[in-house]
Length: 297
Image (tube, rainbow, N blue to C red; front, side):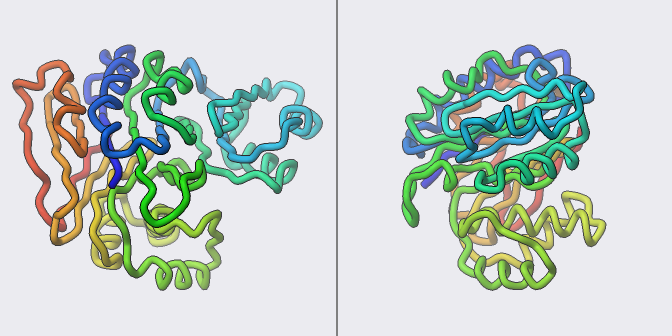
C-alpha cells in the first residue's frame, strides 16, 4: 500500500502557493505509506534557475562537488545539497551534459533523476519529517508530485522509494506489475539499462522509451503501457509539460481526481486534496478502469 498525490497548476499565478498545497497533501496520504517518501517538483526557479539543470543521486561520494569542479567549466556555477538520502546537484549547463559528467566522476552513485525543469528527492523516514527536510512548503512552480511508501515486497530503502525518473519523466505507483521482468528483458534487448530491480522503474523506462524512440506523446505512451503491463495499479506520470493518470482494468487501487479551471489534482485519498482553493467548485470523479487521463501545460 502506498500513497500518491499530485497537482498540475493551470493558473500559474498560483505558482508561489505550490509548496503550501504540497505540504498539506502529505498529511492526507502519510497513513498509506510511513516508511519513505519522494517528490518530483517542476518549475521551481529558486532551486533550479533558467539555464540550469539538475541531477539527483543516491549514495553520492562525500567529495562529489570537488570531483565535479575539476571537470566542469569555470562558469558552470555548480552547487551540491544533501536532502535526506538524496544529493541534489545543479549547474549552469544542459541536463544531458551534466548527467554525463556526473556519471563519469561518480560511477558508484545511483542516478535517480535529471532534468532542466524537474527536481527529484527521495529518502527513508516518516514523510511528515521528510517534507520539512525537503523544504516542501517553500516550493514554487507549476507542478508537484508526492509518494509515500509502505514497503511490502522489498526492503525499506531510498532506492525503493518513488518517484522513478528518466529524462525528466517521473512515475509514482500504487500497486504492482506481474510481468515487469519480461518487459525488462525486452527493453534490455533494445539497449536500455536499469538501476534497480523495481517494477516501477520498468514502467518509467518503458514510457520514456516509447516517447523517445517511437515518437509517442505521453497519452499514447500511457495507452501502450496499459496494453503491455499486467497487474493492479494506479499511476501518476509527469513530464516537464504533462500530467497523466491511469488505472488498471480492474481499478482496485483507490484514486480520486479533482479538475478545476485553475488546477488539476489527484490523490489516493480525498483528504489529501480537500484543502485546495475552490475544491467545492471542482469536478471530482473517480477515474475509470483502463482509461488514460492527460493534461498538458
